[in-house]
Length: 222
Image (cartoon, rainbow, N blue to C red; front, side):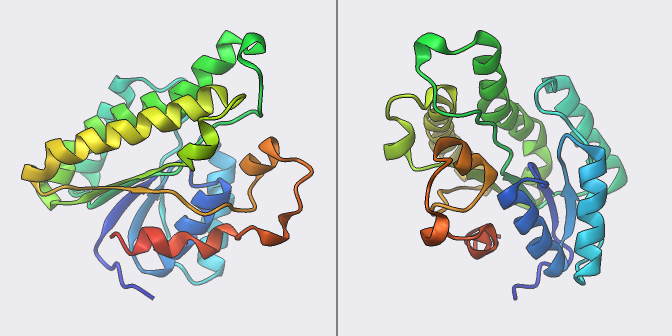
């Protein structure tokens, strides 16, 4: 297991299928992990699970990305700087997807919510944390999806946001090269998660990986 002792990592979507598995592995690797998700109770239960399995106790930062503004992210950055002093990595796993839908029937509120969580929030959270990451010559990891799949019909805001996020990550990688911040993208193999079941509810899941089987892709980049 990779030793991440003295590495401070901020993780979004820490209570999701992938995020919870990644939070556990990071804490088992002795990283100082700040786990973030919208539900404080779920974060508390996640802390208990991590410690029960021998992981290092994480720090908790509840944040609902739906209503978060750039000012909220700036406040977070100041909080990290004042109370921790450093940040080595930012990992984005938070995602929102409500199912396959013809665009003609897509509610505007749903479109805006999915774009906010999947695209706008990771972009402006990243912007707020770049100064800290510059100091540590750290890394940023964006979680994508198979663009060949999510660019097809009915994938709506989720597919659009993942395509835009891939473009943004490529642009940011070029911009931050001189600052020695590594920008990575990870496209996990198909996993058995609640998000995937919304697209294929009747799918035979025997061929799918469990989220814990893909976490090493992230750890290798840290």
